[in-house]
Image (cartoon, rainbow, N blue to C red; front, side, top):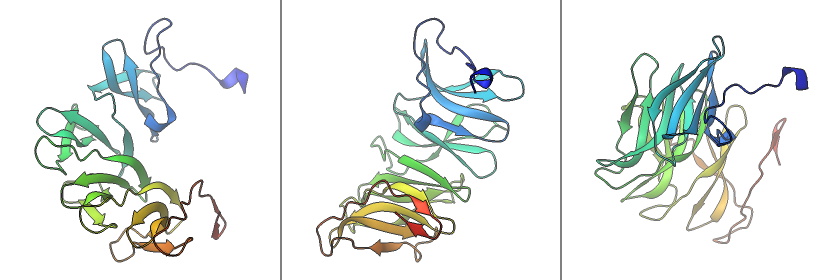
Length: 219
């Protein structure tokens, strides 16, 4: 209601925009994390719901995105000169952010993106020289960060995105050479990741989008 709607903070004082968009917000029980502009660049920020204080955690890349993982961790894409755009992590128990995995080793970027948290695991897509853009997941630990499946075998891109939570399964759109862009599903394991339906049989693409779960069905 209007009486319960208020500005939490003017991150860029005056008429300037901080642009804390929905795709850069993630919420836990005690606060809201956001990636937003301030006068000196893009920052990972946290708004504390109890104290109404905005805390600046770290300066991040202009193209950074984040999602919650585990109990109270935050994984995000971020860039530095040594690793390119890679997977980083924020742990409230430690200061700042830290590199979690250099998925594409060296200065080349894996470009992790399209983050979606499901059952406390972050699913995303990232690029390697061997497999192209494919499906990855992380529980917020180095040993728990892995490629879940090379959907489009070899160097070609599987390009998974559009994740939809359907309870005990996660649906998404991806492509391979045999089926084109179609609907895929995973239960979070390699063996449980497979083509859900080839809407346009053969290599042409069904191109599913705006996928909506309703009861036991998807529309």
